[in-house]
Image (cartoon, rainbow, N blue to C red; front, side, top):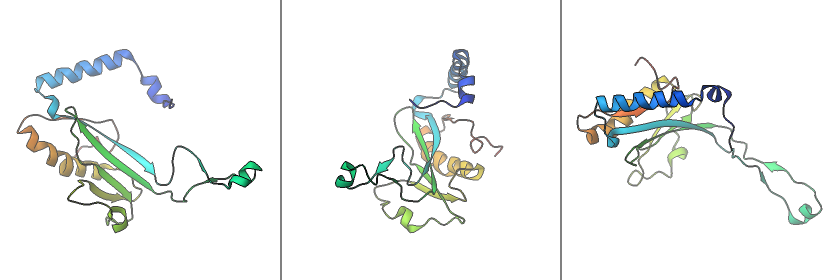
Length: 171
């Protein structure tokens, strides 16, 4: 099991869930939002080179003598964020990937294996590799709107997001 953040545990309540879903269904009915126009988006950050498990490399002879067991990592600690969105009908939007970089240029080595004829993905950068208000708005305008508008054909679309600051801005 994975531990739950203390704030989430405190907020966990059957009554709050019931009220949330009642409001959600009421608004979906009010605006006639269909499942094929209902989306969920979230982001996940990854420290490159860090896995959930420790890897150990050693010699079999030394292992049998109980010598030189050492946990290794590749030394890279850059942060990358993935923006992912899925529709209630099971379709997905192309992912967004945010690399850490001082400027807006995406390095060729980051995207060298991407074949535009086979893969659809959006790349950008931020100083720390995290999403922010500007990138959240850009994703909404350039990815979400671009890929969902033709499918909705002037019908209402619903995008479910969490309360992350980059998701809820005045813009």
